Structures are given as C-alpha cells and as structure tokens.
Length: 272
Image (cartoon, rainbow, N blue to C red; front, top):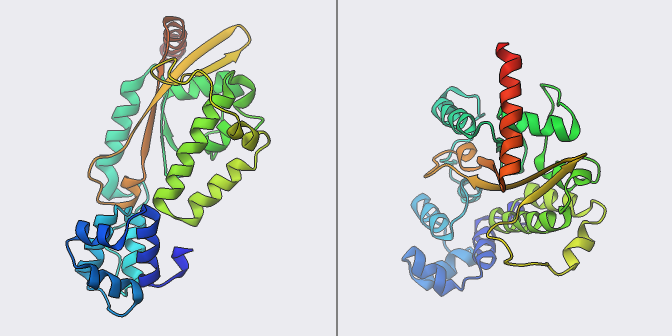
C-alpha cells in the first residue's frame, strides 16, 4: 500500500492511480519530466512547495496530501478537527441550516465512510417508520444500513438496483482516496450476502428515468425518493472536505403528501 511507502513510491503510486504518464503529471505540475523522474526514483528530494504542487496537480484529497508531506519529511498543513470543535462552528451552523431547510423531507450529514453525523427530523421519522426509532447515542453507518440484509433491504423494493449503483460509488471513493479505511469499507460491503451476485447482473431499464429512485415499501405505504449529495466548497480542513450532505426528495405527489403529513403530525404532538 502507498501508505506504507516513502515519498517516491507514494508519488509514483498516485500518478499511476490517476492513469497518467510522467509527462502528463509533469505538464500539470509545470515541472520537467526529468525532475519528476528523479523524484519518483528517490534520486532527488522534494521541497515542501514541490510536494504541495504535485499533490495539487494530482488532485490528492487533503488527508492524503498530509500523508505525502509526512513521507517527504514535512509537517502536515491541513488540520483535521472534530465536527464539534469551535473552529468548525460556522460549518455546523451551515449544516444545521441545510438540514432544517429540507424539512419535512429527510436529510443527513455523513463523513467519508458514511457514518451518520447529523440528521434532521424528517430522516428520524423515515427511519422510525422503516426500522423503528434509534437510540439517541446510536452509531449508524448508512452504507451498512443500506447494504446489510436485515436493516433497509427488507423495505427497499429495488434494493438490487440501488446497491449496484451505491457500491460503484464506494469503489470510486476507494480509487480516489487510496486509503485502507475506504478499501476496508468496500470489502465489508461486498461481503454481505447477495451483493457480489447483484454486481454481476446487467443493469436494467438504464435511462428510463432521469434519476434512480429508492422504492421503500412497508405495509400499504409506498415511498419513492431520490437523493442529492452536496459537499462544502473550497474546504481548508480535512473534516470539512470529507463531509457529505445527502438530501432526500419525493419522486411523486403521494410520497410528498405522506412525508408532509408525518411532519405535521410530529408538529402537533410537539406543540399540542
């Protein structure tokens, strides 16, 4: 793994991961191919500014940007802080605002491995309807909840189509960040029963709709939802870069009416 190697090997690994030649990377970083070759062979040591230039050219995430700096003998420049840290107060306010604006429809904030960080009341109502209310301190991984056989799968009528797409997105994450943690998440998801078989089947009805909805069913209630995923613009912090906000929208009027009715009922109980 690149994480266990020195700077030269890490640099070569990232370049190959991107599918670029030395000439490609040298052009993007505006250095000579000869200099890049010496760096990849360990025959030249990079300056701090050169590490930053190469990491930027490669589009390396901030977490791995720090790893390249450390491998070259320099201190990390990008901080990773807890979401509840004072310096991320404005980020938290923005997340709370986005989640509140999505009401009565569901929305969540997750980290790079789909661990739930925040959720709005609409999401809490959807989860409570499908699988029952969660304890306040429950640690939830949305990837496991989606792919595992005993959480959302029994209520997701088009589970195979949704999971096929989701696994491909995790594969893309693993290719992009190159960390053992993301690779471990991918392997964990692939190990769930039926997942590998689903991936081998050809996709059906490709292009039949502008987005792939999630068809939830429990009893007589059908919910059809599609999602959007947002990230923070121009992040300067590892935690901020790895945040994702997933918002769920109704695919039809019946779903919208059901979610709005749940929200109205919750408001009556709160203020009644």
